[in-house]
Image 1 (cartoon, rainbow, N blue to C red):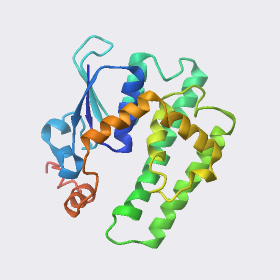
Image 2 (image 1 turned 30 degrees about the horizontal axis):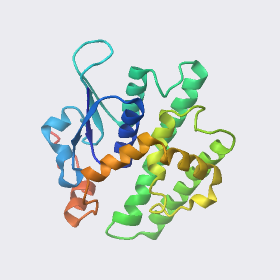
Image 3 (image 1 turned 180 degrees about the horizontal axis):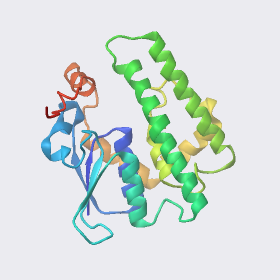
Length: 234
């Protein structure tokens, strides 16, 4: 059994997609990041960066004590290796998949996240910041579109690289992008969107976060964190 500590963000969706695709038994433990639940001591024990998602695997491959994993890319890789699925076993295929997994972790996710922040949540609309991240998101969409011009999925067969990238494309309108400008990306996006496991992952999210609007109080929790506010000991 996998315990998934989760909220309905793109990084959270990555893990529910994998768990649904692999048909692994799992339990969701919601961590409402708008209410500061990511700072609870019990959550920090498994996710010291006070970010979702995190998992606890109660049946690890070595048969030992439960294993906890934080950071969505690390979780995807852990689950892929645990199940032997959604990552190639050969050197070249594995390398391709990991390259694109880390591309999402280091590029698409952070840049699109800043796009969301300055375009939607920042109390002061800073034109330079908005333009900077909208353009960088656009560049990254172009990279992915080019990659998909001659292949069905990002790294050969459907893999954790696709599961990592897809949730960050879902809010394309909020990112001020147009999928029609990226035909290969759009074809890939539609193919993943209709997969039964993806449909189920997003269906579950709708029942967990029924008030997705970010209030002023939630904004202070989400975007006002320092070492002190996160409970860092002196």
